Length: 318
Length: 316
Image (tube, rainbow over all chains, first blue to last red; front, side, top):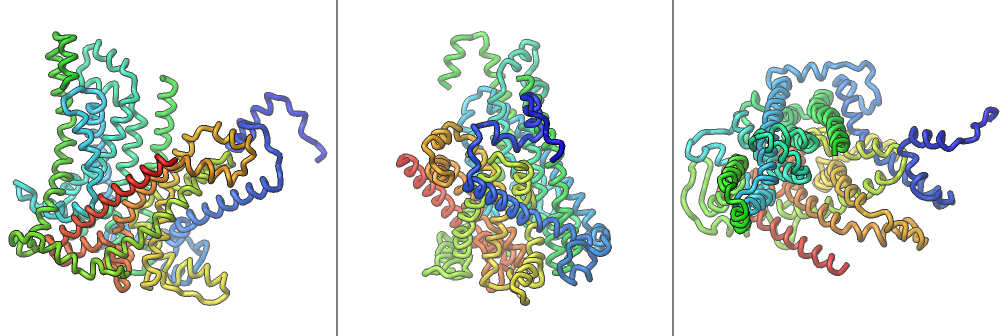
């Protein structure tokens, strides 16, 4: 305690507040409440609960990754916080198997998720722009109809969709067990929510931009493509994250429409089939689970930055 | 249409332009609407149609049977019984929903209250609580199978606390299988509920709390007297989302029971029953019937929930 803090100068205090960010909010907003015993107990309880919950929420995933780095013998030996010799054997083994090959599943999932995300983005932004800006008869009725489709539950559609996809109306195509068929149907999964999100966002954009474009002689598509779409970047990012995540994680319809030939399976289906066939090969199963989780995590982290940047840019311009 | 006429009168020279705008508008929404008709509206009507027919996997459509399938379902003891018994698809699902909905709401609200505080590291904790919601149902189920297996992490922890061997097979015992799925789903979905509650909490104006501070109301009292009632629209929204999600339970039960709904039918859910009847027993007509009945139940529940909460709102 020899060198005490120098007397606090106001602007130094302000800088210090900035440096400690979140912690300072409580201090700056209201006059400092007296630190009574009750207040201290309350704080301790909140922190205890907060940290306890975080451990409860994250430990299973840490343990998943730890097990995926173990050997079968190590995993069977019981609980171990760190594998003796961390190895990627489990990953190597599931990556290119004869019967269930995760490199194929991974590729399939990537193809399906990205193509459905792109289709959904295009249709939802174009449709959202029309529903928000272009005037045409029955516009509101049609929009309510779109939202109404969200009320139709999957359990009602299971049988009819299956029958339709096995023997498609008019053409007689069998669209099950093909990636094409899943992309076709999958484009409907996230469309209504995305359309709604995009329309709501377009409604908040000032009309000045479009009017300027119109004076320049830009048509509707050009206005949408050059003006509205860039302005809606944060909403586009949100729709992209949600759709990609939704399709990457999707199991119900994939299981219904793609089961049969394992060369068409998604990562989620492959993981489930692996469990069904090799009940307790835990290191391999945990490696497969990790592979099923990581891409969503990456997209989330990467796009979140884009998301924040988009909001910030909109704030500066607006 | 009235609006169109009005505008046209004001600017007659723009009539062609208005027509063009409408045409472009239709063109832009045409594909999404076609997709909705094809994969939402048509299947809905088709489900009712199929449910009124004897329709098998190999034989195909064998003709109109009226309400026969519905009559069969009425007496189907694998689907439901009266008085309610567990291990029937419908009551399993109702039991699951009754447990999981309050748990999800309470957890979501608690976590939202925690991360809504001016507290160190709240961004980290918000992400931590939301993380399980990002993970696929397949991965979550397989991880749960590992953690809750007889010699898994949970039993190891319990054994350590008890000081003796504890080897409950959580998913292998009909008395704990569905309950374990309840805890699993509360864990994974509460992050989403937290985000809904957080948005609602942040829209409550601060001066409401300042008034409470002047009244010297304690934190606990202020929460129950002010925050909780003000969150009523959020409660409604979260409850609807949670109930609809609960009645859809399929992935976790299917994966954990290896598609059987076992042990002893304890994890056979309503949607899994539709799947089993359709895909494993090739009875499409009957599967469609179960689907239609579930749809009608969900629809009336949503309506009832809206009415109940709507009335409560007037009272407040």
